[in-house]
Length: 463
Image 1 (cartoon, rainbow, N blue to C red):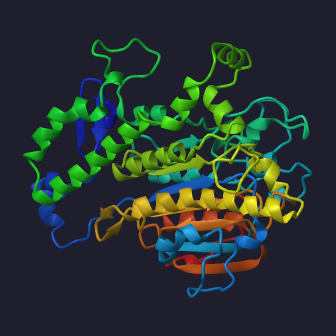
Image 2 (image 1 turned 90 degrees about the vertical axis):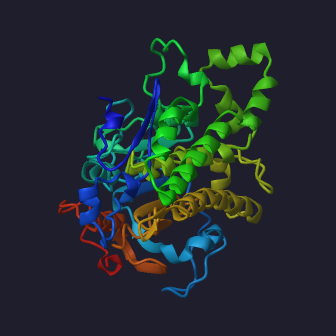
Image 3 (image 1 turned 60 degrees about the vertical axis):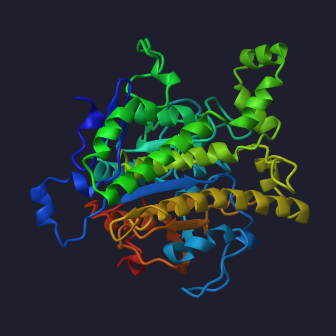
């Protein structure tokens, strides 16, 4: 039996070449279990995701001025207004193993979720100090999921040595580590990310006779869906239709990434050949050189994470919105005319810092989009967001100073009511970032006694 069909909580729609895991539908519970659970609250699974932003933040436009629950969002954090009561802004957290290094970016990215010292290496013999917190959670939360964890990004992993720092670029390309020496591979193509979740064969192998890649996943499983609709109640039928509509919408957007298609149509054969010779993908050239708008691509990845959490196909995900020292061209944003990394070295020029703030706000908008999508989906007495812990942050405070102190950190969701939310909290200077990770582990019931350089939990956050 296909691994996707081994779920005990969720139904799976099947067809030749695809299978679609579904949200929890009470109508499908065995009558005995349904009777036992009458009057009881359904225990929803906990989820965890971490979104990483490269190159730090405009330091004067990040932190809210007031502490506690009665705080006003800062200019950069304004996009989070709709979910302010379901999030935490955390100040004062630092990654001490990034302190004593002259390297500005890579060693402060590779350890973002490990909180350990990164070894300075120049090849693939890397060492990020230990396992990352998402992988610890994957062993605990994801052991019953089809995919224990998902790793996504917008930029492909970089190899080779950075000429200016003399360190391997691999450290700047991943925040997720199975062990200190084993980085997790990432998917950067939304189409491939979607197909990996819902299609039953591996790209590159001999295709099935009917070539399911030319068919919608929904079309493939539609007969099974129609049979299922006859077995479930009205409320569950509405849930099913909402979910299938979301899947259909994503498929249509995957087929219609217009900005990149328009750009590719203008590429001459000579330019295409030269890009192939230099091993540069057309989408990379378009995004980094020409400033093609990547917003829909970024949000497609977010929506795929939402589908994975909604259907319980995975409970843990990481998403890098750019590699360390990313030079992505953000000129598709009004008021920006240069690359992210160059602007982050603003030299306190007001014009550069204004562009820096706009780029930071774009990243927060993608995070807010994820929180709002999760909060729009009902689950039990709450929402998917209520049952999640969604981290957002960067390995630097200010890209100009490369400081790993007082990192920009936000957490959305209460992890199933395990965290107090709706506050702006500031901790003593140099409080380990790993204390937040230890708190998240405690909120999930993990029996891990310590993590990274943690000195304990942030007990004020725990319910």
